[in-house]
Length: 315
Ligand code: PEP
Ligand code: MG
Image (cartoon, rainbow, N blue to C red; front, side, top):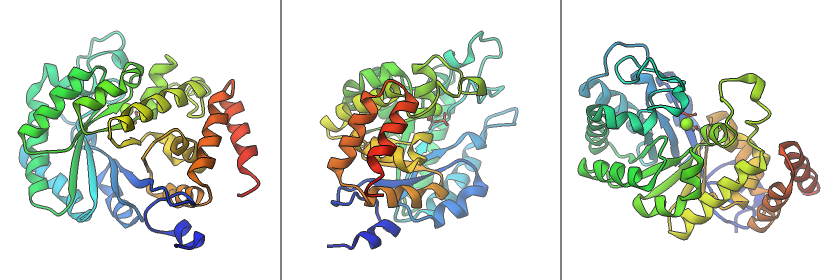
């Protein structure tokens, strides 16, 4: 049996009683690659690909994309890389992909919805990911942002498979997707909860507005309830269910997320050690108890307070 201290400082994530929790890094720009690859992780849980598309008049070509993806896959040879396909629109407008005249861009044609209007964008991207994946030792998964209904997950997974990408998932960022996570899970291979957008849409609170930060607090019990439903429904279908939004970077909240049934956490490289250590100090049963306390709280501050108090003795 591994010693607690060894489990806490390195290696795959696990609770004190050995329940595995895959710990992965978020990656969003080429300059982050070295630190991300060096971090002690089981791979990239969220590879944001928007950097390739932003600040330009036309979409990047296939060759440029292949090169960019290959660099990341090579750096993670032997590990998993979850590529999030283009999330255009709202906070990430693109002249060649998003309409400039939408009254509510966050509720407009964004994320996977962009692929309906511009099918060639997603097709070129999936082809480039597949091409780069064939040439490396990384285990490449793809996932779509802003999936709202099961049919979207199915269409995305079919398109990914047509390019030879065998593992395709849906992000849960819209309350409707969380409420129907079981049906979503039937249509694809895994779910990944984006708590930033899920909070935005659950609370009807613009994530760009600092004045609404209290509503967007990842400790909000209503948000945690959506996480619980997604994790429960996804795992009931035998699917991994990760969290890749900012909620995953808080060591205390990580215990709650695992207690809610989440199977992997993806966060900034600098946050992983804290999350790993936190998990190693608690059993799965303790995580479930903490999750129960958070869900029962009336608000985010209450949830944080209850979990902090209950977690203190063994910390
Ligand atoms: C999220 O919404 O939580 C997420 C991970 O995606 P992004 O922050 O890129 O929208
Ligand atoms: Mg998002």
